[in-house]
Length: 627
Image (cartoon, rainbow, N blue to C red; front, side, top):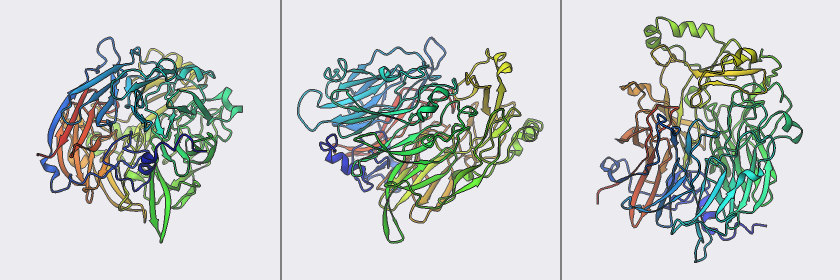
């Protein structure tokens, strides 16, 4: 049954929560998505001595002021085959010497640099595969493009693997034949399990009511053959909706033969009047049989999603010692700020999950779900269930605008539906957590996670009124969006005053540690520094974040993610900052921590994201301790 898994016994070992490899061979380090490194030299006592080993610039960057769209670069560096591999937002691969940063080779997909489904040129990196044999293309690097091509390249030379698909390039869009209003953009690298590539796609959010139905594809890593294709939208509903796709990273447990797919919300995202029937696989974490594509179980964390609270990150696998029993578990972080801890064999909650009543919708044709699942153990991140309230400083500066807004907009707690009146949206669409997800120390069953506290406003705009606003520009997950085919377009933006200050009370971002054996929060502290027009906020204000942490066996967390363009090392025991360095833009990627030729490194790709602020970069920075 597991013919595609047998050659990868070393990867199977890495998939368990006890994996302790010094490599960083996947987006989250390994395909258990623990983001844990067994490197021990980085400790609270030594990490202050970190120094730059080297830096490298890819040349693939745009601020959007010229002919090219702006770049968004969230690529995790991959360390494998004694080489560091990165994908770029110009859809190139660069292979670097891990010790010096010297370029060994580069490969260009020659993809058109057009923002086909996204507001920016976007890339989250590459995947690595090896067969265990000797020879040309027995080690491969895979790169996806926005126009739905998957490129296979020899990991030693950078030459195309001509025995893969059509001369080394797989046209994934050949399978995009239902409601195909946009291409299957391949921005997240595939998950590699044995000889199988597990592939999702990203689309054009908030643009259409009826869109391609979300699916998960399994592809043979050697030939490019489609092994199976599993969808998450009920067939009878496909003419009226779409998406429920997988745009972010996935996780696998080869011993159970399961891949865990974080499935997103259906279209249209903020009004569901034409899709009110149950969609039990949408906005879920779903376990899929790696060999057959059968959906084994689904856990839905939002019923009838009308908030775009899509599942933003790969679940993390961890064997939890609880009440004298070892439970093979997974942890799914959500945009709502919940941490759902599930038995990864069955999808059953390890800690209680309760259905609570939530507000009804007054929008035309809408039927909001009467209840939603609440996970209160572990406690929600960033106090996501408690509205932050009006920030006095921003209110004074705006002569009371923030207070007037609070009275003007609808807010009845989390899961308040979008409305024609305008709704205060908390947590906002970027979520308490996003693609960075969580990191876990498997030695102590402790979880670490950064979370944002962002309030937005969202208004449903009746179709006739929206048509008069079509000239309005939309930004990166903010502005006017049509939801074609629905009775409403939308306007979405952060809740700020005239000066751009947040109207809600800080902190704007936090960092937390959770004991997974008990569900107890060990600490939650403000994280990062907010920045506006060159001015930095107080440390107690924290910062919204994009990107995630990495934990190490030495007791140190590495993370970028914050507005202030710093990369940091934190004390795992307290969350206290131990070291930081200023880089060229927010480091919205996940760092890689690995050992090369006996030396330990931490490497950040520094790309920026306009959701946080306009600065972008093409910088790669490596750090190590002095010799």
